[in-house]
Length: 136
Image 1 (spheres, rainbow, N blue to C red):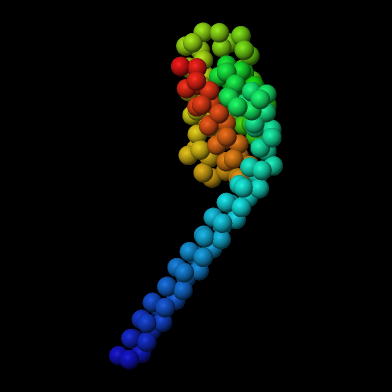
Image 2 (cartoon, rainbow, N blue to C red):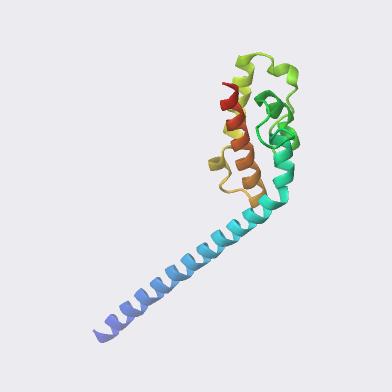
């Protein structure tokens, strides 16, 4: 009887230790991702600001300009295709391509991606939303 109790207590301790170890590994991975995102954000800040904002850096560019130049700031392997400005002449076309871009670059869709892709998607998503709101 004592041996069974001892085995059960040891098994419980092992299970708790394994769970604690997994939690610590997960916390370390999250902290590393956060640090990578901060470093990546600092690295690409100038490029993304140049793409998204007017030369004075105060306001976002027009949504049509952002959509037509979006391919220049995406990550390698992104499925976004270059979009000529001539395809964005009608309001319906702008809305259609805006929603396609929002679906592709939404931060929730990039949870499993690397830090570079997450930071780029977040900045693109933010810029497109602000420019679209301004255009409405």
